[in-house]
Every structure is written in C-alpha cells, then in structure tokens.
Image (tube, rainbow, N blue to C red; front, side, top):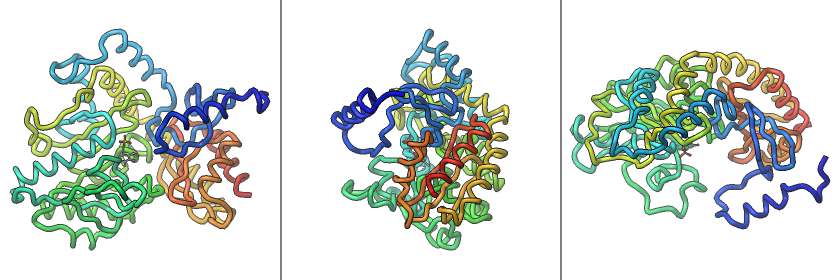
Length: 404
Ligand SMILES: Cc1ncc(COP(=O)(O)O)c(C=O)c1O
C-alpha cells in the first residue's frame, strides 16, 4: 500500500490541471496502464473500466489482435496522406462497406469530422440529386442530441453547456423531440435533405426511443425522399448486442456515421458509409482530411471489422447486457429511480436526493470502478465487451454499495 504522501496521483492531477484548458472535469484517477477491462493508475491501484472511452474501447484495452496489427503497421508505413494510395486502404474500405451493407465508405478521424462529412454529403445530395434550391437545405435533428463539438454541430445542440457562447450558429437545422414521429413528419418539407439521429441517445443518458420509432423514421424518410443518417458513433460496432443499434428494429439507414470503436482504442478512426447514389456526389477537392484513412488507421480498422464479423462481441454484449440490465433493474427503488439501455450499455438515474451522478462516480472510483456521469444524477455504464460476468457483478455490487 502506498501512503498518502507517497502517492503520485495528487501531483499528477495538479499538473494536468495546471497545464490544460479546463474543458473536462475528469475524475481524479491518473491511469498508467491497461489491459482488457482493467486499468491501473500511477499508484498501482486497479479499476474496472465501465466507461471504455465512451465506447471507443469496445474490444477492451490493448486487444492483442489490434495491438499486433498496429505494431506491424508501425514497422512498415504510417502516413501517406490521400495524395497517394496506400496498400491498407482498399481492404479497410471494402470490408467496412461490406459490414455496413453499403457501396462506399469515406474514412475520417474523429466522430465530429464524420458527422460534418455526413452533413456536407447530405446537403450536396440535396442540391444535386433531390433538387433543393441553392442554400435552402434543411436537416432535421432531435432534442437532446450529441453529435460532437464543431461550431456547426453545436449550432443544433439543445444542451446550453455545449452551445452557449459559441455562436453565431450555422443555420439549416430543425429540432424536434426525440421519439416523436408526428413532430418529425411536421418538420420535413421540400427543403429537407436529411434526418440525423442517434438510434440511442448516449450522452443524453442512454435514451432508447420507443419501439417502432426507427422503422417509422425509415418509412418517413423513404416516402419524403430524405436521407436517414444514423449516428452510430457510440451505439454501433457491437455496443448494443448487434453490429448497429438500428439492427434491433431491422432498420437500414441511408448513411451510417461511425467512429470511436472503429479505431480499436488505438487511433482515431471514423467513417461514413452509404451507397454510391449518396456518397458518390463528392468530387475531388470538395472534402478531405490529411490523416483520414491513413495506413495505421486502416490496418487497425480492418482488424476491428474482422473482429466484428465473427459476431462474438455482439453475442457477448447481448448476453452479458441482459444480465447487466436485470441486475441494475433490481436496484430500482434501492437508490436508483430508472434504468435504460440495450446490450452492455446502460444509463442509470440515481435518486437525486441521495447524491449527484458525479458523487456516485467518485465513490465508485474509490471502490475500483470507473464510470461517468452525465446530466445531473445520471451515470453511464459502457464496459468493454470483453468484460466477464463476474466482473459485471463486481461493478453492480459496488454501485449497490455506493447507493446504500
Ligand atoms: C453519438 C456521437 N456522435 C458524435 C460524437 C463525437 O465524436 P468525437 O468526440 O470523436 O468527435 C460522439 C462522442 O461522444 C457521440 O457519442
């Protein structure tokens, strides 16, 4: 055991706060190493990671297949820019397109960049294919959305923390209540090029829309000649027990927006996937990114797609997720007021009379479990899909103890 004086954590926390903008409020845990579902801090304490990098670590920390692919690629070629083609590019794009059941993909780096890509593609599709008059395109989005942090994306956020003081805002977005088909239908007109939605709203607290909503959105978009753009950056790639959260309702959007786990927890990799009548609207020079689709990203991303093709992670998420959701529901009335989720992804609302979500996360960390609060008294649990059942039981037991 380290004594308080010999602990490295307080100094490391102080240094981090001294030298960075305070755009995050991290828990006072300074991670030094990680393996699978566990991380170890600079003082040698171990924590079960129940956030998994907001689902960027679906395959756990340092999955051996992904690490091996990264190492091998580091020894061969890391960056070319898109000015040239490299030998990892085609395989990644083809295999990801096939996983999505789409003709084409466009790789980028961060989630927000992929969302921006989707917005640009939808607008251009609107002008060139649908025939929307110049500068008139509208995109319908949902209240409570989270799609990233760029100036355009925060323009249609309904979260004052994300949006206030960052105007002037980008026009062209209409906001409707999430889960309300009638409101969505009313918001669509001849200028509408896309409906952009998370199939489950992660940052909002893992909010699952009512059954029938996503098929209803699909039907409406088809009927009104509007693109259904599904932001599966957090919900996709096995998190909910299917490859995509849309799969639960048999829905195929016109465009998938992917990120986070696509980079295997190693490099930022994002992408949009769509058929050629949509993604084919882009011409050279109209969109791009120096690092998008780089060799290291593609080498790792290809292995991510292959891991997903086995179906193992989706199956684990479905089976263990059912166990997790049931165990959490048992805590409703014992300190929790609500539990939502799908697969290994849960949003739990703590009785606000007991403590805030932040306090709950601090107490969980003291007990060796890492999770993250969102919006007051809600915390999110999104462990790596490699987690074992007994480890989930450990996490739920710690939550129960914190609530007691
Ligand atoms: C649904 C969704 N879209 C977009 C993003 C933005 O991704 P990034 O932080 O990689 O830009 C996030 C991040 O949490 C997200 O959850």
